[in-house]
Length: 124
Figure 1: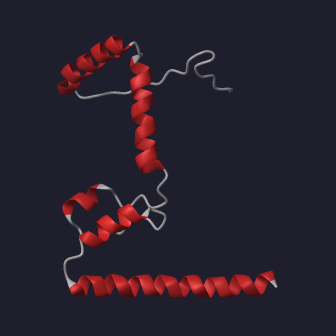
Figure 2 (figure 1 turned 30 degrees about the horizontal axis):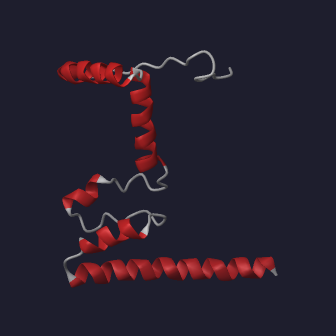
């Protein structure tokens, strides 16, 4: 089945929400009308934003909410940028926690270097 988007037939999806969100949904529909966009446009924008913030992660078990709680071991995904890693390091308050993390990072680095040497042998 070929999916067709904005240029052709629309794809219909549905979602549910709790009754206590009725007022919010009405406000959202009113806002969409005022801005000249569809409710679907707003939903797609929200989903795209969610994907950009969460979908690219290769490590779903490290939830962003852990950083807000001050949990020291909410280690960012390896591919996160320096800003995220800096936030993480600001959460470390005890030297012993830093030492544990240091040990883990060195273990990962040893494994990384070992695999690098193995791949270099294969390449030659």
